[in-house]
Length: 113
Length: 112
Image 1 (cartoon, chains in turn blue, purple):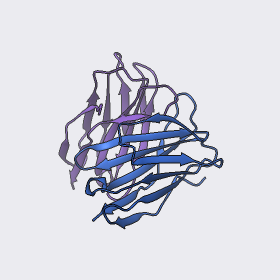
Image 2 (spheres, rainbow over the protein chains, first blue to last red; image 1 turned 30 degrees about the horizontal axis):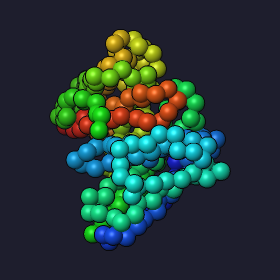
Image 3 (tube, rainbow over the protein chains, first blue to last red; image 1 turned 90 degrees about the vertical axis):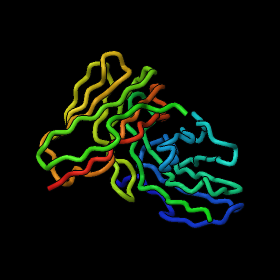
């Protein structure tokens, strides 16, 4: 069974640009959540999508957005990039039912210059 | 944002020693999860705990869900070099919703 796949693995962008990251969850999983990991703030929850609907949202500005497609694949978008957006962005997949584990992808390392 | 208090922040031990780390919170959690992360990789799930007082093992790893539902600990017995990495605890506030709150991590270094 394939794991969680995130693309691309690495990205370098310039301030002011926008970026789209992709996540393919484990087959059969309907929940995809996104996290930002930085040395200073650790792992912070961005948002969760379940059956194409945003179910939960963290405390990030509106520049961070996401969506989920009918096949459960998800994308997150960051507009008007800032230097502080440099981070490892992690996607987690779960079935979305009660008491289920979340399985993470390898992440996308975003560097904003 | 909300965060779990994980300690210690780092550990330097000899191969073969036992390791213990814990997480505490002011909030009650429905689920506790323990992850390990290695450089350049995403966190890998080690153990999931669903009931207060639950004690669960996975090989040399043992974790417990605190009775108050506000804490959890992870023990690693007879450490080996491949145990090196950063260990994170994570709490789930809402059942079924994948909104995890993470601890700051415990960095484990092992001297052979």
